[in-house]
Length: 102
Image (cartoon, rainbow, N blue to C red; front, side, top):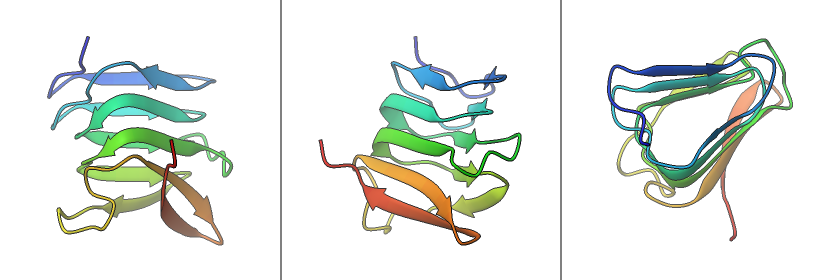
């Protein structure tokens, strides 16, 4: 089932896998990685316990907010990977967004 606006899901101590959409206004969090096999339209926070190696993977990047290990970023609809499969990770104290080649 999709995660609806206003809903919050947290995977304590591990990864979170969502097989449907994360709608605008919804929030998903994980101590580990986040995998979204649908559109990511809400907020996604990976590595919330400070795990620098955490990543966010999604089939369609349309997120309101993304965060990995305490580094936050909002996205605009003109981002080059908007609506595309992407991964988000931290390196050198910065968030990086790259295409997910599937």
